[in-house]
Length: 194
Ligand code: GLN
Image 1: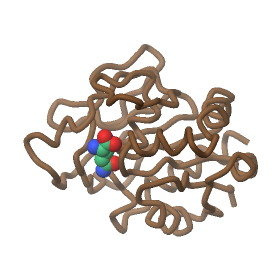
Image 2 (image 1 turned 90 degrees about the vertical axis):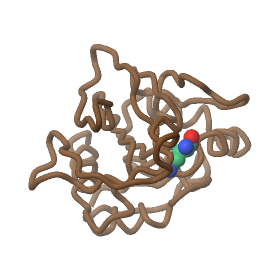
Image 3 (image 1 turned 180 degrees about the vertical axis):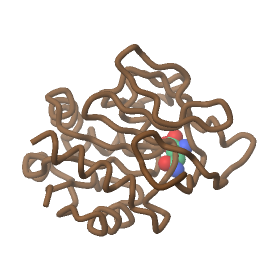
C-alpha cells in the first residue's frame, strides 16, 4: 500500500486519515521533517491556511515541504490545502506563506461571502461513477491557471479542482463524505509516481 501522510499541523486531519485508510493507503500523520521523509505522498487538509502556514514555519516544515513538493512528491490539498499549494494567493493575510506547486492563483473564502457552507454535486474528470458530493466550507476557488494545469472540475462557472503533474487540489472536502473516490484517485497517483 502507498504510504501517504496527512500534514497534521491544523485542520481536519483525522477525517483524511480515515478516508485514506478506506481507500487502501497506509496513512500516517506528518508533523516533523523526519516524518515527511518517511512518506511517499502527502495530503494537506482543510482548516485555516494562514494558521497552517504559520505553524509550518514554527515546526521547521516550510522549506522541507517546498522541497519535497518541488521534487515531485505527490500531494493533495483540500480547501485550505488547495490555498497552500497555489503559487499565488490573491488576497493573502499578513504572514501567510504558500508552499506552491500548482501554477494557479486562488481566491480565499471566494464562495464564503454568498454561502458560508453548502454542498453540491461536482463532476470530476478522471473520477468514474458519477459526480462527487462537494462539501464547500468558506471555500476558495481558482481564479486562473497556467498552461501546465489541468482543470478537473468547475462549479458555478469557477474552477474547483485542478491537477498539475503530481499535485492535486480541490476547493471542497471529500474527506467529510463517505465517498472515497478522490482519495483512491490520489492513492493511484502516489502508486504511479513510484
Ligand atoms: N477559508 C479557509 C482558509 O482561508 C479555508 C476553509 C477550509 O479549509 N474549509 O484557509
